[in-house]
Amino acid sequence: MSFIDGNKGESLWLNQLKETHDNIEKAPSKKFYDWDIKAEYKGSEVTYEVKYDSKGYYYADRHKRPVNLYIEFKNTRKGEDSGIKASIAMYYVYILKSLDGVETAYVFNRLELLNHLSESNYKVKGNSSGGDNNAQGWVPPLDSLKTLLRKKVVLS
Image (cartoon, rainbow, N blue to C red):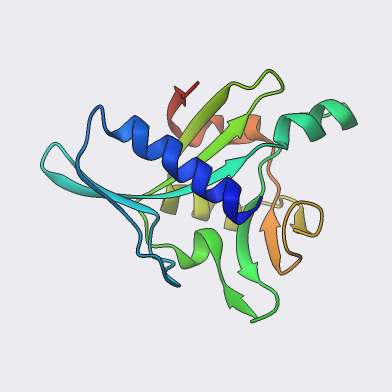
């Protein structure tokens, strides 16, 4: 996942929120790890960490395996928490682009997802194949997270 992909995911999710949320705000354009989008929903503030993955279905098809997510948790260059561990967002939104171009958002409570990932034995990988080779992340199959799923939204 690249910076451009991240911006695409945030834009897709922001457009989705316009239908139901008020006072939508993107994170500041500086080093800021708290959340990607903040908004009001039914009078309460909500925050979202948004990830976009255009290769999950591609790799699943290519390797004849289930769709896996890549959920970053550590910056290996700095030796610090990053991704899901550094964020303080309420919700973690993972947007997957299918082979036929359909983009679907999977919405999780960030803390529930983090607790599940921390307590499970999912494979941990670096991000050399799809990123800038400075992170580690869990690689859970999407199907293994179905019980944690709060919402699934087809965006395109």
